[in-house]
Image (cartoon, rainbow, N blue to C red; front, side, top):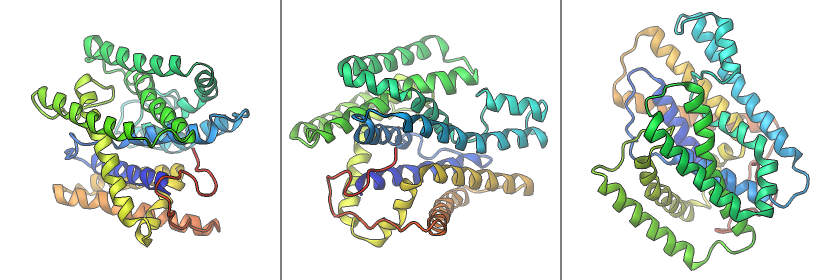
Length: 343
């Protein structure tokens, strides 16, 4: 289905990017066109609206939150403790353990799971508020994003505290992308999303974002987390551009075996994140231990190879569990032709 194709593409790029950035001497070659994590957050909001918004029992969301946080800690704790044991960090292994558990440090590249776990813990109340006062939630979410962005840009841009930057501010800013996805998912559920205004609005947003981004003097620096307004201008046009481009790919290749092959990533997102980080940390350990000086081309090749390996391992994982692979969907607009997707 289209939604799993989007999620799989976003995740594979994130995994490629995380692998290349974990290697010593990395240079971000996608600094000015990297909306993949934000799109993944938005897609998750979309799916939550479609699956959970009008359910009375939301206990599954809390269980999902605990699963996400468990997956995060399964990776974050060994990496932090291992870093302390090999001397990469100052302090004892016990201190590294406590800091990792208390969300005071993170030597991994899967902080997105930390955000998801915390966000899902709040979702039962967020969804109740949206059902009763949707406008209040949407405007409040946007105001919170703008306010935190302004506060960071004006007063906190030199603050390097991990908990403030990568836990508090990330949660307060990324929630906006989740809420946007929530609204779009609700509109789709009601059959009110795919209307002419969506297409004209998307085109206008791309033009506006590109013009404003260009007016800043350069097409936006790649820095984010926490966001500044320059990065937000960049996202105004990169987000819809990438969505439209991938939709074109999906329309062309939706019946092919190649597309079916990568859907396994979006359908097993938590396992995919854990596998990806294990591969990234393993590649980093090998390179650092052997003292290998990587060229840019080799670094990119390692990132691409990691993505291919993740897909292969997930297929093996699915077969070992005895779960059949989903056949490609033939509907361009239906979100679910069978069982609803996992949130």
